[in-house]
Amino acid sequence: MALGAMAKHPGLDVKIVPCGLTYFHAHRFRSSAFVDFGDPISIPAEMVEGYKAGKERKREACAGLLDMIYHGLHGVTINVPDYQTLQLMRMVREAVVSAGAILLS
Image (cartoon, rainbow, N blue to C red; front, side, top):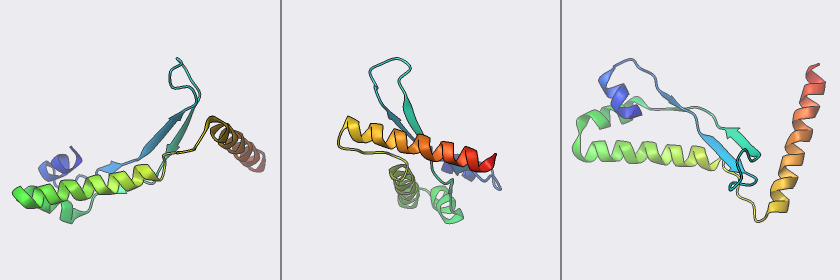
């Protein structure tokens, strides 16, 4: 969609922001979750031109953008071996956020 929009509207600068969601109890309604946002992904003009060219270059542009998105999501996705590690990460995050709030006030 991003490549198509940028191909159709020259000068449009679409940014894709990776967002990682990690739920503590995914099966429960209103479960606690980690929400992490990565750096915005800028789409290179060469990819847009490849998309516009069609055929093989269009496929390469789409594959290249998907690869950039994959790496962006990888950076914001939490993979831990067990629930205890996830809880530890939650406590550390809360401590860091609290410390930051104290420093800012």
